[in-house]
Image (cartoon, rainbow, N blue to C red; front, side, top):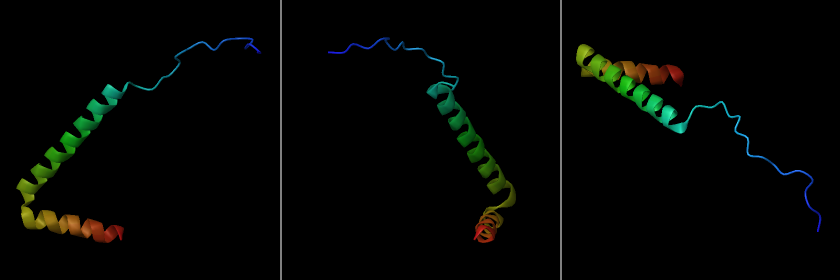
Length: 61
């Protein structure tokens, strides 16, 4: 049988961040969005909050 001329070496040249860093960043972003949502809800009240969300959805459609 034919043998390969050269063997492939496992060289890691990846510059992407580890998955744990991405998971922590995603969790931090989700927590920030949740806290911002709750802060706006308590500041403006339920009715204004839902009207803002509804008008934003209507503007997209």
